[in-house]
Image 1 (spheres, rainbow, N blue to C red):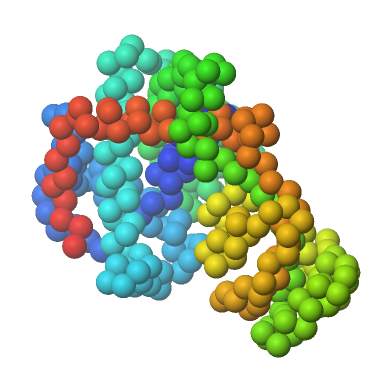
Image 2 (cartoon, helix red, strand yellow):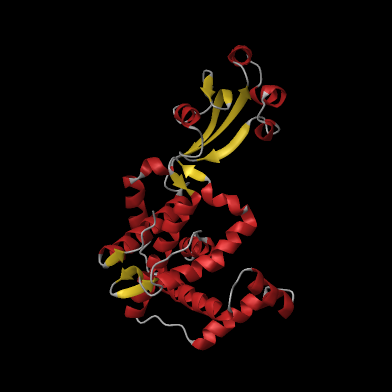
Length: 309
């Protein structure tokens, strides 16, 4: 994974999070305090006023009352996330500044111009600002803090020790995570049909041919049932448990799942350090990044003052 990937994901999240409803407290009251620095209600509402519009354009005004899980509306979920994102950004800017990371006004102007250049012309740029309720001042402030954090994180990621001994130790301690298998399956709607197909396979029928003829998973059927390589966690549990228990070339019994009835054949397994090195490198860097951020957070004094309920 490139060094900036984790941060980019976090910052994209920050740029779209919003909530509905009015905050009636004093606008300069604290939404949160991070190491003595206040995130005010007015700052929180500024994000709300800009990003609420983006969400409603994409999903419509009814999105706010949609429950993402029992008792938790989309509105409540996003309120919590926007506050946590603002806390994270404040904390990381503080830490970057302590480590003598800085962004000049000239660098900010270059980045603003790059953003402007992504539009067809000046009119399209201004229309985008108006449509999304953005101001250039807000844009510059966000670009500056985002670039500061990105520079800080990039420096940390570039400094992570990823020599072979380190990676091999991490692989040995987490070996199960790096098993990749390649499997094919035939998916049908009834247990009777699946048992009939299984009997045909036992009698010597070709798996790929039956998959192309019988499988209702049309995406994999055209490839003879081939699902490609995948790690644990990508398939439904019933399928995964059986697939990872097979030997190469072995065909499973009928496996019921919420999708129907599967017959699975394992075609390959990659579980060596050499075959998984890129995945190990990515996972190790993610692990070190998360460990680093958790360390910064645990050393910070954070007070969440805004009542989200």
